[in-house]
Image 1 (tube, one colour):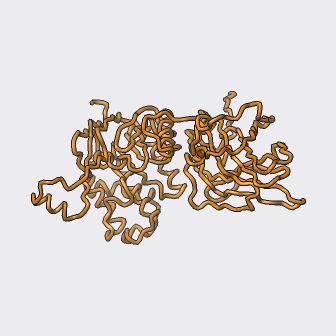
Image 2: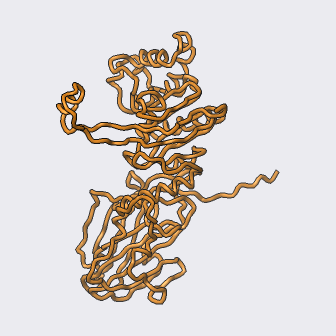
Image 3: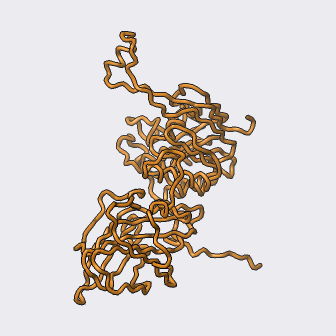
Length: 448
């Protein structure tokens, strides 16, 4: 235990869920012998260790118990069974403004939190200038925090948490409301903490940050401990769980590749592959509808869908380097974008396209079969074309939006047959980002 900062030993958290308040009241007074509640395990026999100086991430789907385990570690909640040993002074940022008094000014809350951490007023005075500079909220520091925007709130809360010299910093998705510059400042502070031998335990849905900053990762699913290990391995396992849940498969059931979903995959003899690695395969629509690739992906419920539907996009997929359908693609790996189009009329030289945009709507990259010099001739009504674009993922680690389109020309006039704007996201997972949208993968050599 000498080198262990946090030891979680067989921790279980059970909640009793009552159908109505009167049931809870009757049970509390011993007025009923019947069990009036349902048992819900937020955590079930979870165990892991965090060594001193490590940055450890906790990931999992919503409801997996991530925030619950942090609250037990910090003492906000008590475990139903099991125990937690913590060695070192903890500073925790569990949720926006946790521990802040809404009626107090920002300045008063600094001293309040410092006192709760065990510091004297003189010790907080010594750290005050650093806290104020980090928060950078100006004269609002003298206003009640209930008047703050969410951005100002998190700035002050994080500034207090990270600048009072804790030995262990615990953060639960607290940076999601900060602007990009403030997040960069916080992660720079993380690096300083690591270099100083501090311990960091963080929960985040940002898999890129998890891969970049964490020494190891804990994966929870539905309250159970799945695995713990190096980030790439655990992130990959998490991606499998996300796909499994989207498909409705049980935990532990083998994740299929995209080929497993086809009754009869297209043969290479039916495919045309040009120098740009764009593959086409023509198929007929079967009487029984096959499982759709797109149902595995996280999709935009407010997708913009339009066109005359002479040709219709009936399915699509994002496929990672292991041939699995997923929204998450690791940087510097090969991936594929596939679309399936059904033709309701004869169409001459249709053009298949995809576009990747950032969250602000700026076109980042994309291509189409016309740019790639792929000719289709006339496609007959009733047929289906499957087009696959293969490329390397060189975009920076962040979320992007994917759009599909099939267009062409009718009597020399441009025609939109079908477009799906911002139909789903692509989350690029990266442990090294450069400036701008994409990475040129520069090689650095010191000559002297």
